[in-house]
Image (cartoon, rainbow over all chains, first blue to last red; front, top):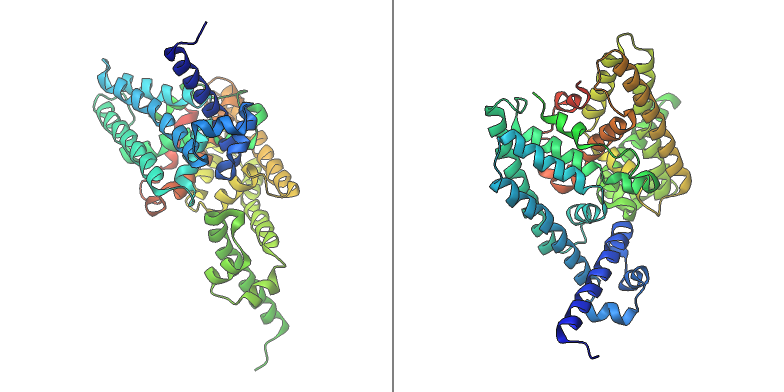
Length: 197
Length: 197
């Protein structure tokens, strides 16, 4: 039975996705020193197949980052449309932040984009812009939550920074002690105490 | 007037200290890709003078890390000798943690030691051991603080991880947005809410 065009298309998408998933792990460990070959080996595919989907390692890296930015965008849109008090929406968003860090790979890549001097400017600006969008929404919810006395009083910008410090710090442990990353992963409840009046 | 041996010795120590201070900034930005020349330029001293104090860049890096580990050791000893309830001692230690991050350079270097695969094993083990000592003291104080109801109930290991996530995350902002690092630096009070019952 010949494959339909649709089935072929689906297979291509699955292969591309599989290569991207492998690439996340490879880049998270090796940074931009990783090669297309490293990715192909980790994905268990041939060198040639990897190159059929991606022209070079920069293209792979770019695709991962673009994908990594979709999840927080969806969370942001959802929190803006959501019913509930500012404090409730903030708690939902912060819980989503923490839970997503149970898979640290993409966050380690975002960290590399923001901290490395060898990443293309275009990519860094994309990540920085998205981070600023997140910060604005957080800041707004914090101010509204302070007005309803659901969030501790004080400089909202400091609290934004504290929240980001926490969620940026969690994935470092996947580098420091990868074997025990899932063990003792801190529940969102602990994180939410940062808001507590 | 000829310099006494003592004055010469003091001058040597000051020069060495000055080179180390410059090296902290250079390594924090460039990682192990930094060279002795980069350090000499940043310190405003000659190539030859830098080499009089340090055989190679590994020796500089090692000296910085050894120095960086002294401050938390002193804090640890002080907190063990300190009067007060477990909650009070814990708050003192955590405030010291946060305040020390106002100068992020050495913490970025410690991060590199723990996360890079190119750092000598001996150095990584030294930093890891010190981190484990800190974790043990924190864990013990948390358990004692839970018994006196000064610290929120729950898995002490998760709280240790949360505390480290926070203090490991703060210095990332010196890489992401160095211009605004001191602005909106989060007060220790925010951090201490992580303990709040």
